[in-house]
Image (cartoon, rainbow, N blue to C red):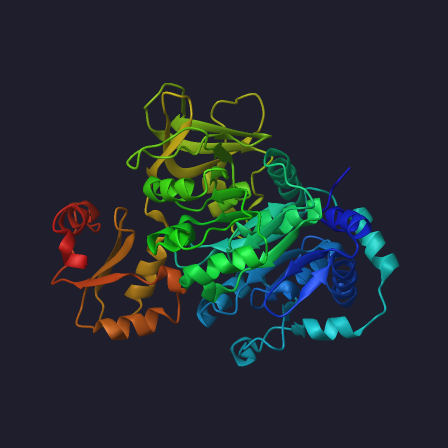
Length: 509
């Protein structure tokens, strides 16, 4: 019985001892060395952390970060990936939510420890110095770990301005990994090219499929995602067979005509996830690589990243949406109108999820957990949780689920789930801004900030960059005399949408 992701590492370290597991720009690591160094990390922290406690990994996207994830898993604690590129204020909010005993960082990363001097830092390089592995302590700890213990927490945008830590169990990760590898027939010959940040749930797919199958995962240098020709050259150089990327990365390649010069000749599987894939750009990929298997994946972080999938086996017109398909194994996806189940075609409803993939909830936020992880209204006989995604979908005439839109102000932008309220909170904190509102233009994929107050755009950007990651910075800023309100005294978003999105679109170009 597999009850911890560490079992995947133990098996691959035996079967594929000298095979490359992960690589980045500066180093690569075999499965046997990965196990050894993960146990070194575990030995250095196991007396400090307990089962079910958080350990923060504050470092750049690198092989050492993955080693930390696994070392933490050996102790029965759970890891929390935090990238050094995040604003210090956002990192501090995450740290305060967790109250973690340990933060593991890397000496070669440019982290200003003065910003976090009240926390205990350990450098991963120091953990590698001690060659004495506490084998007995690690073994005893592993015997106590059960599959409902948390594996990791990933922080997503919060409507109050405070990020939410989605806590995912070992069972959910294992269930997803088994489905993922079996459905797409991954094996030890697979070579993944990882695109997404480790603080984004999509990275879980590559990391654990590699461990489970004895495959290889290359961490693609971030700079290549603005250099499409060099990116394709990289995929060929590494002989990459599978990519699961956000659509914006795939669109960048075809929009610049890079596939006309060179194609990724080793690719056999392409999956897209995190946001809607424009069918026009998908068709451009399909034309260039007709022999490749394509799939559309859908799911929130609260469902271990994916809860539906769609293997694309028929043609789609450029203006026809690609379905999100059918539920993953051991997961049920329902469309609901209030508390009623929707079964007929072309009737919109909220996408709700139940099953093994559900997260444990939001760390240190019981109220928010109870708000969206609710009792299944269709089940009155016993307690059963479902997750209300806030996404709207419908069944098409084929019985496939099609994603339509967000239910509220939470958006999908550049592959990230973002609460517009968090951006508004950052704007409202700026001196001389009296009121603000954020809108999202789905057609142009633009975040639009509307505000009243005598503040220069450059000052606004400077202020919010200290609080928000780059993908949350608005694309357009519009200053108006007065933000309108409705009879209830709330900002009249419908009026603003009508004027600035449905009306004169040139106003925010």
